[in-house]
Image 1 (cartoon, helix red, strand yellow):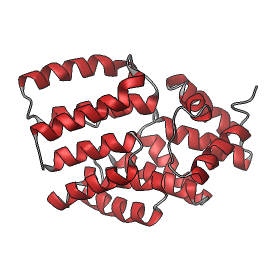
Image 2: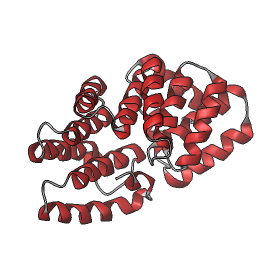
Image 3: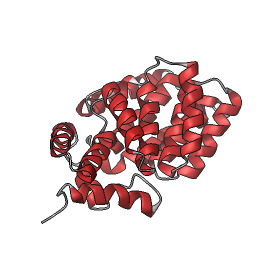
Length: 245
């Protein structure tokens, strides 16, 4: 499943079609349901794919299909949580992930997804608690980079520059083509006046997700539900000279 997040977003449409054919053969395959939800949320995040406008809605449709096929399972709750998270319903997503943890409290992937959701809500303490447990359970799993990203988001929103740099560098090392961590680096670099760092990360971001920052600045994509947090990111991007003219 995690492989879909590290794949070239341009390949996701083909992967989705292949997985849909697999689902037609076995509608109760948990891995297939999770892959589809993740694939559509990746398209939503990257602003990519043939059906960008409907990607977030399709993620939710796939999560509901997972619930229909696998009701009251940790997989179904995890699918619903991830789809709702990327549809902006973060509070309900937290409840979904918590319900999945009640069924299986030792699933590192659920803990990391919950931390990701808590991060954008600005709940730094919860992020630290959930990532610490997840990393103890699975210190080298494929989702470790997302745990690092959650810690980076929490530090970014707290304006803890030292912690932010530590965690965002780890998260970028784990997944260099994730757009938000690059955008946060651009905003941070503009804040501290590091032109070389700014240019490096902006060029990298534009090489794989050129529409990501414009979608933020134009209000088409909202990462953080709280205005103060969203403005923190947008102000940093504007200090970088973006969104002008």
